[in-house]
Length: 192
Image (tube, rainbow, N blue to C red; front, side):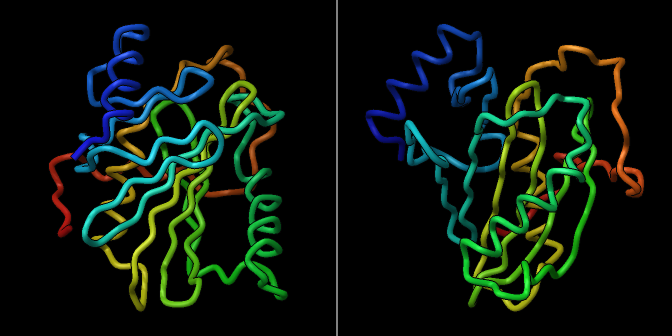
């Protein structure tokens, strides 16, 4: 059930940006269409991540200013973000990554790391835009990163609306990373 604030903010955002009613506008022209990911509402925050929940997953979406461009390879920023997360969460030996992935968001790649924190498995993805970073986390209480969690995370990423890159034909130095895998299609269902 949506809160009154979510309904009001969602309605204002839809009217001013042309977004669908279920899309939440973030800064930098980014939007998140929660209904497309099977989510509703959201704990809207002016600063920091916006949280969404299902019976099986928690979701955090945040847009933050960052000295980057849409053609900056996110692999270069991922190492700094991982070091920050490790320090903030108290991992003295670095972020305990279960796996890493490179994901194609259509007009740009994103870098993902999956790690455990206590009983939770967290899939954390970073995408870059012109002057900002988009951080998406999905969290589950689980022993491992399951295929269902991977598909759910892909649905969440597919529900992002990122502004077109300012210079779509420009690419900076690419990281030594494999080609990005495509997102799972919307026709694949997950068990929530």
